[in-house]
Length: 217
Image (cartoon, rainbow, N blue to C red):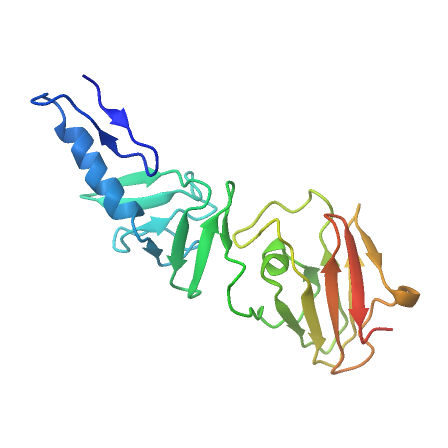
């Protein structure tokens, strides 16, 4: 009698008593249990390594986002299910699989992005965690909010987008622009930090509408 797949992490069970050929299925069960129970991984972006135990395949990998484990020189991959949680050691935070990507849990600690010194796109990862962005540049910097559908979901992205805070600490101006298809709103159409030391927030209202509020001119 063939085995039955049990709901949850996909354990096989219910072989007939005395049935032959159950060893491969039981080996799979034990590896699956070891890989998927109380998961802790080194990163969600680093390349896979046979020395790192249970891991998440990075975005560039053919099995991106899957749980990966090297056993005896062979790689095992498991597709995550919605709601699966993992502790990610390099960022010291819990991530959850939202059905399409691993995202940082909303209860994560305050996140500071790397200091910005050149114009760039504001990422979905930053909106997902409500990041603080320090801009320190001697020349002008433009932060561009994404256009609808132009930015693929990234690790750390979430449907629950949060306001981000921008702080100008350098001499160069810091302003906000919208990618094609998106709209910025602000009192008096003010989208530039007033002076060095000024701060403002970018509030996502919908997927393509943003409000800029704070010390702007």
